[in-house]
Image (tube, rainbow, N blue to C red; front, side, top):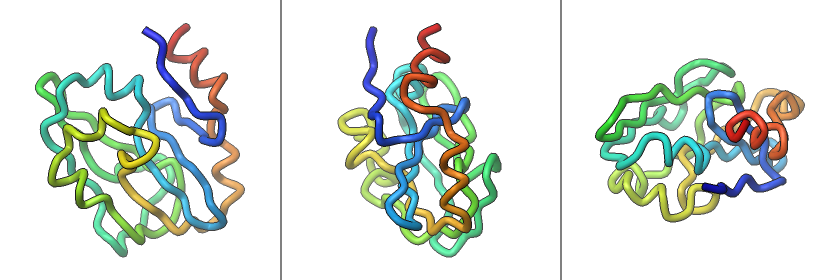
Length: 128
């Protein structure tokens, strides 16, 4: 199965993505991760105002198969969380790179985003 990995995003080896717009990072999870999880039944993400550290947990996502930690791809402060998705986590499959975002974070250092993998690097990692 072939998944989409938009070129304007950066990716982590734990399957989160980040889209940077100025100093605001939109964080979500990739189509690959959603496919691996299966039917998603519960989502818990950091609260507005929470300070996040890159590589640390920023929530959990639960499917019928597993519970996975979500890792923040950036360091910063949560300014928004996707309440619609928290209330209906199964909707993440419809548009993971659009309406399926998880958090918006005001980043401490926008350069940090460049540490993430490009779409082609991430694709090579997961599709081997």
